[in-house]
Length: 162
Image (tube, rainbow, N blue to C red; front, top):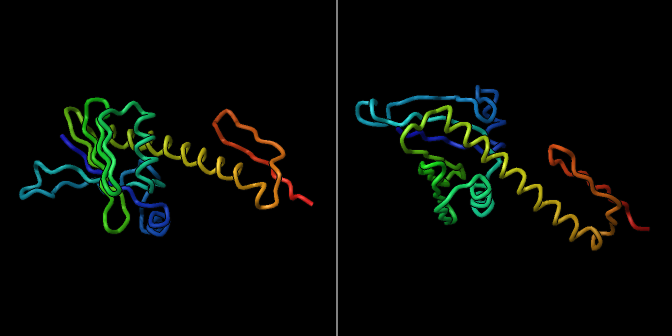
């Protein structure tokens, strides 16, 4: 079996929320029928995502234990738990994730994408915090303190230099 997940950028997802798009992991459309008779077609699920950068996406996959990761600007493939994950960036800047293999379910695919989104968010946070540390002095700020909470939220306190 296989499942295709359409990963809507948050900006698109927020606009579509009024039209019924649910939170990450919530199936908006779970439809079959891409094949000629619809019986062998993969269900399609639309979920929100913040994923944009294919390099960070590959790093997030590695953090989840994925192997055979292959990265191109608009395509990322990996083996995750014995299943093949193919992520393709469409012309509309929307990632489509297709998961195939024995035992793939809509719930399992959605859970995998939730885990991937969480890993991706952590990597984005680390990258942003590093940029703040690097650029604070040049922008007239001094990093006074930095704390990390149990949920890995980073809080930075910056002071304006006189």
